[in-house]
Length: 301
Image 1: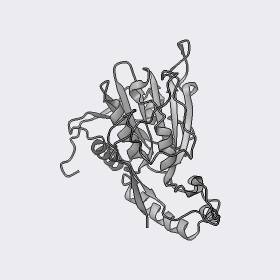
Image 2: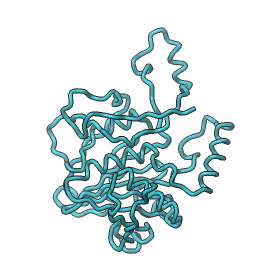
Image 3: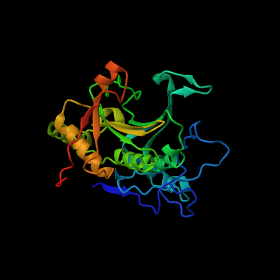
Image 4: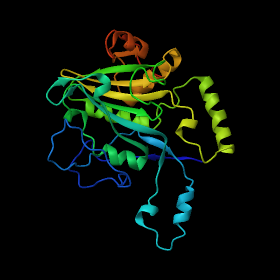
């Protein structure tokens, strides 16, 4: 039986809080801060208060941990419990202009920051990433699961999908980005899938439990409907997007829309836009010529 890990803290993006959370550990190497952040200062932890981050935790100890307990004096590293995530996730970083203000292509500008597959490795990375408010305009953060080889429209797992788009006025993106990342990593959109996909997932999970081999890894499981999320820091606005795998399923798209509204605590009248990745490939733009959705949030949702 699985239980859940959740994080609650006293303040958001509080760099100088003397009470650091115990969820951030040193068992993974943290990513360096992007070049757009000022250098010369020592990275300080940001403490999150997102109430949406909870992820399934496997309560079974791995085989390696059994071997480690055989020692009469286990080291602190082996004594640390690791809480695995359902998927491995990868943070990417993109700037449109290189040093010297040379405009570079989208693909050329994307740089991989780091991957993480546990709660502990996520916090070790997250506390060293600059918030969107500290990034220069025309900069993106991208978070996608490891099945996405490159966070682009043409990727095999992205090409049949699309994205929900929310435009934010300057100065409020930090909270929205944090809540969205916590929700994606914490499987808060897991119910946003078709009934056929749910049945298939249950059958595969049963077979995997009965016939699990040592070669099993992320690639052997069905990828989630949510491919990832991004935030784009621009001169006059900040834009968050949530990418899904299959744009043709209207019901699933609506489920994702309503879940996104609740997670970000958006007013019912918030204008949301949806654009397929096929349309993006046609006009070479993520945000132009989008379909605007003005459906109010259902009171029962």
